[in-house]
Length: 460
Image 1 (tube, helix red, strand yellow):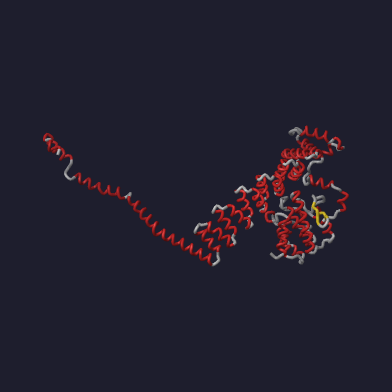
Image 2: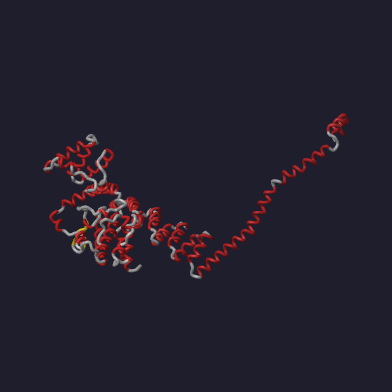
């Protein structure tokens, strides 16, 4: 149109016609068009695929899933109708992922551990804790009680599980320092028990606990700090003679250690009226294998102790012959009760044998070892909170068979009392085996041993 209204430009027509040959533009467009189509269509392919997939999932797959869920629900209901709640609970927990429905069914079926686990998955920790305790899974119950801030409950449960260290920690959190000190003592954590007793202003008891913790240690450069603290505790406990003996030994290794020299001078001035020389006082430090309680026991009414009768005397009166099983059990139970009373007051004995079990009234009284402990009674795993139960097992074996001399722990663990004495019932073989098992498998204390003996004797 522009060329039509401006004739002066007509001369451009030949140039336009020459620069764009006839049909060349259409050819180019025809070549470009398929490419454009592909650019438009290719991105649409995945969109179409996704749309089809979504339609398939929302229809076919969903119908199949709903059908499968209905079938599993129907199957679970059928199990419940047939009186098989545990099978129904498994479907709810593992296939339908409904732990809140599975938990009461597990509980009804008697599987308290899985019921507790299902309650825990549903967020009901209190209920889970109660079921774990009922099932005898005290450690799991204690962990939940601790998470819930119920430290008293946690301590009790840890104690039932034999985890006395954890029990002591929970008691500390609950502010019950005395009870925590007792648990530390049972767990063999004597230094921690001493620290708590010191906080409670009970220096005598703290010094006793600390003496047990270092009974096998020697005073040398690396242990000066421990013995120095022990000496300070002895001072606070009103035992200047013993404190001076420990400080003198520290001074012999390092005379410049802290304020040892000043303390020695002060204690010497305080003990001048005792009539004891410095050399005598220096020998009163803690030796390996002795403790304060040992020294106290040795100085208590020696004339009276010569006349006292021990369990060793009773066993020896049979001249190497076994005691009757009933008599052995009677004596053993009396010793267990005496051991329980002793441990409640003093913690583990650690060197327990018939030599330190004294006849008292109608039962026994246990004291620290005064005579040499029979080697067969020493725990092969070394001193630990359950060493006394190992000694109880050896004691039962000796009473039932007549002798334990010459038997090492490996031989004893392979030999049952009934193999030596055919009158011994299998019940006592079982109790003996648990007593001398490795520490983790032993009875945790006299109460467990008494309960097992009663249960086994009833045929349970």
